[in-house]
Length: 136
Image (cartoon, rainbow, N blue to C red; front, top):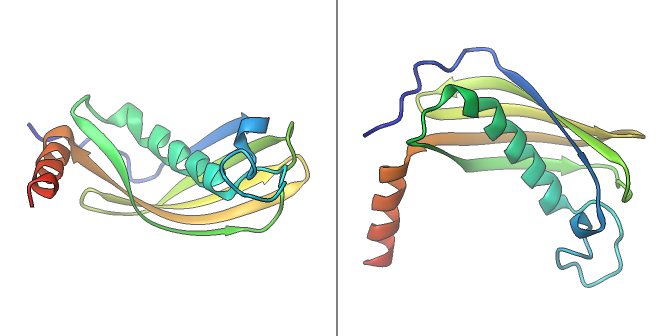
């Protein structure tokens, strides 16, 4: 079974908010120096989550959302306790690939600009690719 993309609108926006906690800091995710601010990989995860949550209501349960390509500029540190808001806008669609323009800000101003491409694939397609990879 393939997943249907027929219900996804051409124009789509979504906002996600999160409070920065100690387990989201650069130091907590592996930076060997004491950097007590929101980690770039965690910020990217929030951006990917926001894009996925924008698509999710339009997909059936056979669909998965995976990241394909990303360009990220993290231009300002965010301290623990701050609220981060991620805003995603669907910029383009090519078949099962969706390109997002993403901005983020915290309590103090802009923190990130992202250009993300995600793809919608079926669970079966992922399973086939994993099997092929494991048996090659």
